[in-house]
Amino acid sequence: MTVEQSNVHSITAPGKLITVAPGLALPGYSLSFEANEEIFGEGESANFVYKVLTGAVRTTHSLGEGRRQIGGFHLPGDVFGLEWGATHRCSAEAIAASEVALVRRSALDRAAARDGDAARQLWSLASRELASVQDHVQLLGHKNPAERVGGFLLKLSKRAASATVELPMSRGDIGDHLGLTLETVSRTMRQLAREQAIALPSARRVVLRDTAALAAAA
Amino acid sequence: MTVEQSNVHSITAPGKLITVAPGLALPGYSLSFEANEEIFGEGESANFVYKVLTGAVRTTHSLGEGRRQIGGFHLPGDVFGLEWGATHRCSAEAIAASEVALVRRSALDRAAARDGDAARQLWSLASRELASVQDHVQLLGHKNPAERVGGFLLKLSKRAASATVELPMSRGDIGDHLGLTLETVSRTMRQLAREQAIALPSARRVVLRDTAALAAAA
DNA sequence: CGAGCGTTTGAACAGCGTCAAAACAAGTGG
DNA sequence: CCACTTGTTTTGACGCTGTTCAAACGCTCG
Image (cartoon, rainbow over the protein chains, first blue to last red):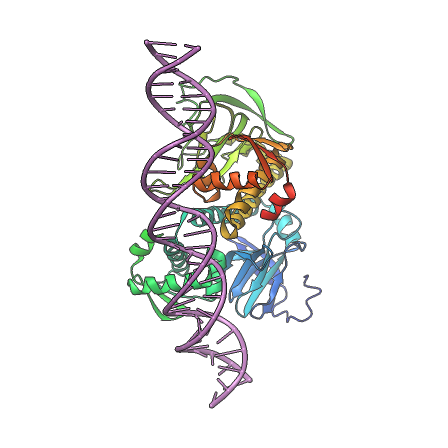
């Protein structure tokens, strides 16, 4: 999907400056998506780089037979959809109603070619992505449900810089991210709550009570 | 470990030109390692980039409690140990007796700064790494043992451009790579052999008989 | 108030891990 | 050449853990 085709969306702020990385701001559009709406699809040409302004986004790989892997969740401030090649290797969907900024990839490439510091910022962005995926491999390879959920909640809490975390995604989304079923995610979170490691004021709100226990589990 | 410290190793070919990427050759050393010898450790400063000349290498992440994740296997021609940051995020060990070439990272950085094409080659190297790790996340997230082992063997066969594959690594290594126990790896390979998908002339030699069945399993 | 979705909980099953032992391969020294 | 050692692979039996199937519950929003 390109901006030209997306006549269904309201371009809320055309031409605004988007901060892709520290010290790298470029003009971009801004689109609104409702929950579960696709932002881009696997295999589409990667003409844009995206940044979450409000809401939340998931990037998914389809595996057929209804199985899917959620590569990651993106919260306000996160950049996603940055590809090295010509096409997107995953699809992206809004989890909740979200505003997303778009920056032309060609503009990014030009900035990187012109400015060595901009190129270094892009490199740093990509390498952080790589580190995050490698951590995820460790999690999926040899960890039990408590460790997976515990680590996931810790990461969210650290990201939010707060002990209370608002979960924009469903249990099923978390399961597809952590390689578990939604039932196991639910049971594990209940168990962590029973053990006082977390509190669950509501299904989508988590308060981290004993981060040491969560880290030990992770 | 730096080259200066490694007096135990014979520098077999000092000053030889090493092809790090297509069209990017730089002077480098060449060291010999015996089986299970450490090439570099997690957390050490990443002063070199490495390339397998002969033998095979594994890169591992330690998880404590005897658990480890093998991030990948590297065969002759493969480059490994390329980091964005100052330190290695994984350790590397020779699986069998191996010759490994070393190129100074500072030389690589200079080449990238000087030559735009060299920088692009490095970027391509890193992005292929990222794609490979993302594929691995899919494998670990939602696949059963037959799919994991089948996909693993297919990748090796494709890499070797041959239906018969020589496995330099043990069942345990494969298990730590695929998130399985060594027993499950052994059982799965035996089962694939029983189903005529592969043949096992010996434990370390695999002949792919029915790649379609392996791909379906994968 | 009711409909629909997400979450929780239960019960039964199956698959993979764990533990243990045997088979096998390869090297070492007598 | 054989006995012995060491490490890897294979096979078996068992138990646990997470999945599957199913039903009840509780929000949230018409």
